[in-house]
Image (cartoon, rainbow, N blue to C red; front, side, top):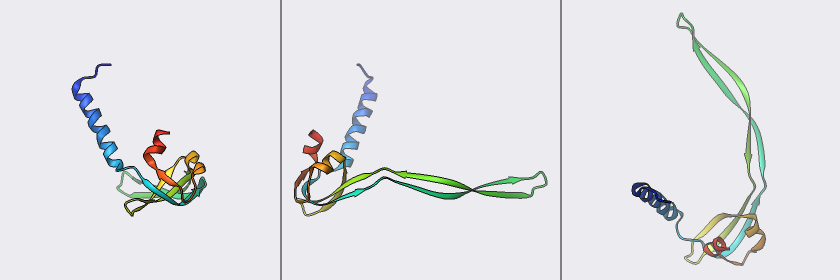
Length: 113
């Protein structure tokens, strides 16, 4: 597929920026594992509208509206990196199930699986 050169340059620049924003791959020893179950939270919020009559009188009416927030389940590893930093990273369930605390973790190797 032939793309115009300016578009190709923009796409390549965006890809390079996205990759550089990620930083270096995480490499080190797993020190902890944490699983957060999916959660649904119910709450309310106020929904207000203001109207102005032909005489200039402003009227505000508010009603309470139910809300629902859904948070997906998450699997997280804490890794003591070789450079001394400790990082927490989200991983797929398959990775979480396969590794144990004390195992060596290499983010680049996991991505290549």
